[in-house]
Image 1 (cartoon, rainbow, N blue to C red):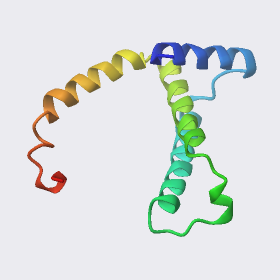
Image 2 (image 1 turned 135 degrees about the vertical axis):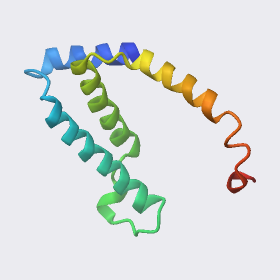
Image 3 (image 1 turned 60 degrees about the vertical axis):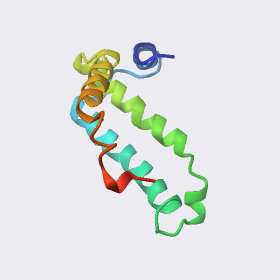
Image 4 (image 1 turned 180 degrees about the vertical axis):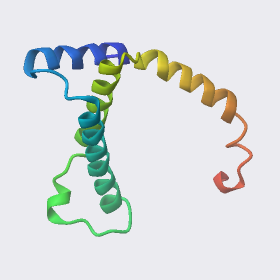
Length: 109
């Protein structure tokens, strides 16, 4: 599924299972909450914090998918075509960063 298809799937899901989109501020708060859940898993599983038994049950992929879902809700309700926006961003990063990372001594193997 591409980004446009995913955005449509989210919109279809909202129409079929939700009453409506939460307002933009609520979705922004929800996005922040979901990113926090991803951060908790990363910090405990890959960082220096110890992982609690309840943390081990968390599925990183599922939490990342929550982030994507809410981001798509925000895109849908604000009229953003994520496919076009992502392509534009990738082109920008390619032009700006093509040589930059290769010249960074901190990234040398």
